[in-house]
Length: 68
Image (tube, rainbow, N blue to C red; front, side, top):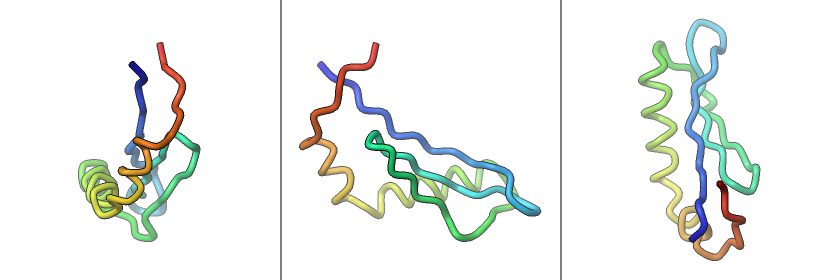
């Protein structure tokens, strides 16, 4: 059984935090906006992930190596 890791992160930017979604193939998508808290930035990253069902579906087609 293989494991696929998608990372949601928040990084300091300006006076707030920027949300980023990173896919197993190394593609990262960051928000253009900044948010006042880490929680808000992470929520935006999760919503961004859900807004791209085609990317999630594509994960099933990937030959992702097993992570241990």
